[in-house]
Each structure stands twice: as structure tokens, then as C-alpha cells.
Image 1: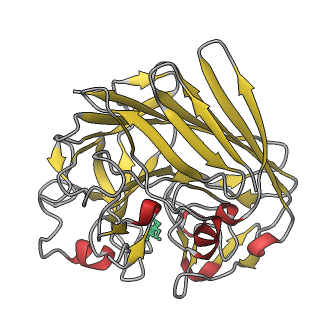
Image 2 (image 1 turned 90 degrees about the vertical axis):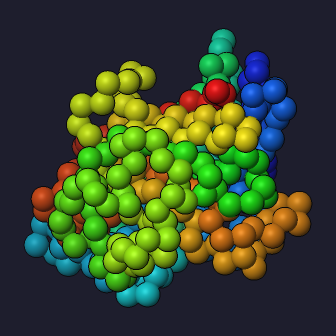
Length: 340
Ligand code: GLA
């Protein structure tokens, strides 16, 4: 197994494993210039191999759940591996988080990066087609971390790639993330059933604890008596990103902004994707030992998984996740770090 380190001109440092493309650490300056690691993880590879939390990993072939691991495409029904109760989650038993990627580092004038490649054989975890996947991580001197995803297949197949880093902008191991202030550029979300599969409804966030259109602390309403929060044990939902968002970085539009008051760190998420899964770390059970021997309390990290909507192959009304042979899957997400 190999580990790669990327640094930029402002003290940011990223460490990545070829296993799962896992981001094991991401050092970011706070408002005083002090640098802390802002992602959760483990000290040892073995812990990543055993874990089903997806800390820092590339997710594929399909981010989030597919109901009962089943979908029909061109008249044929496919059965995928089920690894989350009755459902298929994050690519199955051995998803892209648990394979070894071929890594090539590169350097440019104002950035440095890694190209990660993996070819998923036809039938892997039940999916049709040989899927050739390239994920590029770029760290820029503008304090941006860019994820570029590309894939091609020799047969039609669903694809929904994402990155599953858990952030704590106060610093890894510094308590929970309930004081982080979140803004989501989403007027609606996709409510789920008790197994976290979207019901198909697109529901307005207005008047619900899912309204993050104005900056709101993650913890402000997480304890409310709400059926959707109960199903997720907190936030574990796909938000439907507004179609016209003013702030853009190329084709990627601002999806989310997270501010941590004690450190002053600010993270902005731009994406070309139509949705984002906001996960408030509800399955962290307070028993888990992470980096440097820190025990991670419940909700000590959050994830913003930019994506197409969960279970899309079973919802013809959702934006399509089917990649046709001869076409190219392309997706970009950009994290911009700053302080306030
Ligand atoms: C996603 C899922 C969650 C959970 C985490 C990893 O966010 O939606 O339910 O599986 O990944 O634990």
C-alpha cells in the first residue's frame, strides 16, 4: 500500500492512500494560521479495511442506496450485493472504497495532484459492464481541493461517484460538529422510508428542520421530533440542489457552505451534481477509536456527498444515472477553504 502527500503554498497538506483513494488527513489553516487536520480517519490501514464508515474514501460504483439491491435496465433485472439491511449501499460489499487504485502524481504551476485509476470488471458487485474509472484529486494554491470523476463503460450501467470524507472544521477529534453553521442551496429534499430509500417525493424544506437556506447550526433542530430525522438518526438525506445558483467556479455551482465559529474555518462546496447527501455522522457510536487514539463521539464529523439522487435506477423521475456505452461520465466537485 502507498501513501501520497500533496502540499500547497498556504500550508494545506493532503495525504491519500491508493487503497480506496482514501484521504487520511487534510491540514487546513484556521483564522490565526494554525494548521489542523480537519478530516476523520484511522491510524492503521487495517482499521480502514474493517470499517464500513467509508472515512475519506471514493464511493462507487453507486453513491448511496439502491433499494433491495435491484434495478431493471433495458428489460433486464440486475441483482446487486446487499450490504445495508435489505439494500445496496455505496457500491456493495467491496465498493470503490475497498479496492486499490493505480495512482499517478502530477505537478502544475499553481497546483499539484493525483490521478487515480481503477477498472471495475463486468459483473463486479452485480453491475453490468466493464467500468473504467478515473478520479483526479487536485490541490491548488487557491486553497481548493478539486475532485474530477470520469468513467466509461462497454455496457449501459448506473454510475454515481462521490467522495466520503467526514469533516470536523474545528479539527479532527475536537468534539461534535453540532455548532458548525451550514448553508445548503436547496429548496427541497428527497424524503426516505425507514430503510433510508427515497419515497420518490420531492419535498419543500420550508417549515422543516431541513431548511438550511439561511445559515443554521447543524445541531439547532437535529433533536426535533420529526419522522425524517428519526429515520436517519439525524440528517442522512439527499438535498435537491437549486438549478440556478449564482456563485460558480466554472461549471460547478455553490451547493453548500460550512462555517466553524471557534476556528473561523470556512468550507464551500461547488459541484456539477444535482444533489448532495448531508450526513451528520449519526452512525458514529462514541465507541470508535480514530486517529491518534481519539474516541469519536456521535456526530463528530459530517459528510457532504455530492451526487445524483439515491436509488435513481428505480426512480425514472430522478435525473438519470445511466451511463451508455460510448458516452463519458463526468462530474466535478470543488472544496474551497477559507477563514472568516
Ligand atoms: C452515507 C449514508 C449513510 C451512511 C454513511 C456511512 O452517508 O447515507 O447512511 O451509510 O454513508 O456510514
